[in-house]
Image (spheres, rainbow over the protein chains, first blue to last red):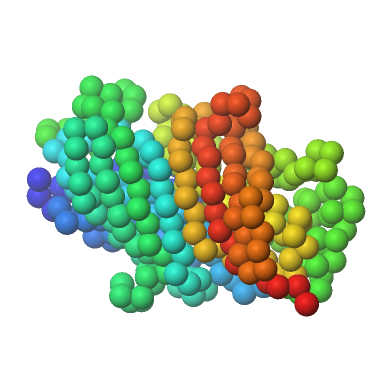
Length: 158
Length: 148
């Protein structure tokens, strides 16, 4: 699948998820090697009102979404893949007033399970603010997440 | 922690009303977490809210929101029960999703499994129908400030 098509599918997937719209998540980069999303800084996602640092929950939403959408990088067709588990290690707090980037890749794909890993960073990918691993279950091509979702995300012809 | 936040916490615990404290945390307001005291325990509630939906077709709550809810619940639980002088700082968070979070109210309770001088381990359970059928379980480590 071409990188452009992965990017387009990721953008359509994101736009279908209400909470991701609330957070203002955007696709930064998408290809067969992985997915990068952006979580824009906003005063609404602050967890510590004394220093303006964003809450870990917003970061978790970014990374759960990034890992979940990274499955598009390795699947020929859209499949619903619910999260089985997720682990986040926080390296250091995010800098206030700066966007956060989330990168994820799939490092093992089996008929039932997709293993993903990634990290969140601000300016420098070599100084991550959090590391994440997530495991996703493949529900199969037959289960499309409801009428029209798979078609809408695949963008018509596959 | 600033003096007024400390005063808010003291007042909240005395009256069993955590609303004013939660109003100071923007992320808590964004997802809509509520906290009440039931006997000597804390019960957290996340009212059904369209903005928290991840899968619009089921519809189901976004897994990240469930995680954020549980993480926030654990931090507040620690803040209330350890008498920590600062906001607990999260070290790591590990979450198992057991069932889809339906579009309805979600509840969470926490248990401090181990509290050392610098680090605390908290287990969190989130459910919608009954505590015996959790939608997610999690554990988290927090760095807590040593009380002088």
